[in-house]
Length: 292
Image (cartoon, rainbow, N blue to C red; front, side, top):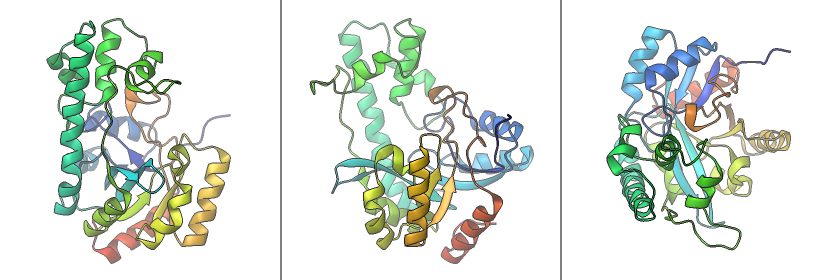
């Protein structure tokens, strides 16, 4: 049985954040897989949206201008990702909220590399930076890519990744583990709204965010990502139920990261139908967002 692909994918990354592929490469892969409408939602930045829109016009894909904000649920002490769809690229509310995250991530990555060098690993900061060239900064995936090419592991998310960057079973942090500070999820929702976008809770099943949906909906959350490669059937069912209970839009996307994710999950392998996109467009138009 052939797999189903979707013409509408509302969650995708490029080299501007943590995909190894350029904007053009991502769009051509998406178009080759039957995608006609793609939300470019790089982490904590809208820097690539103008180029994406231009290339989308050439390639034949309508670009939904988006962002994925790395946030935190301080009440429950867990991460949360907030998608913004149909945001105004470069809007001050997004820039002011997200710029510190982008800058901190890059600074911490430099410290991680320094720690690895001190521990005897063969790599350098310029070497790691080369993997992130053209983007907004270095991610752990870029560090792992360098380590992989130096022969220390055979995959990005190998046991070495957990050994270096995570806390072990005994709670001891890896030598390159440095805690990251994220923005409050409430602030992320507010910033997306100020930028004219529709705030969507990304992959709540993956990060365990279902408990917060009701209060975030009261604070302005307008959608929930039900369809995501990490979601089990029960996650999808719960997301759809919450969408119905709290009047939220339903979205979905492959969350494509190229080599830095699941390379077999392409743009369009997860998504929604055109009707759901049209509903989002109508909402964005009411908010003054970037909806055609």
